[in-house]
Image 1 (cartoon, rainbow, N blue to C red):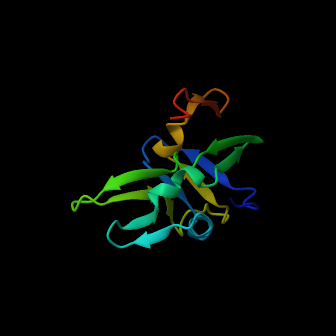
Image 2: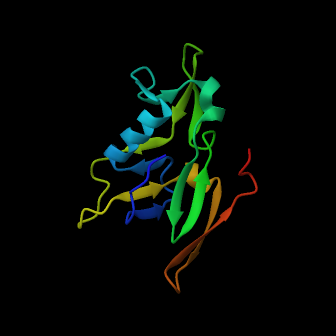
Length: 136
């Protein structure tokens, strides 16, 4: 979807539900996928009929592409009035930077459902493997 966000940092966080990134990037992604803000939902939504046609979203970590399909980074929400919305799992935060103004992405449960993570504290490394539920 977007290119040029090289040098960003990423945190795999099981305590975060969604994917959080710098507001400017997230807005650009929402514009690219045709998401519109819904005050009813309080988030960006896309027509559910278009989810299967959404572009993939790839995070490159240590040179390895980790891709999410449109169905991975959206979820269905049914309102109290029984209206179904497909909600973007991407949220923007202007403070998603470190002290050197490097962009930080927080890869929460939405990402970690599709990419298993292994943490090696001895080498301060994180490894990723595609989940068996990747295609669901």
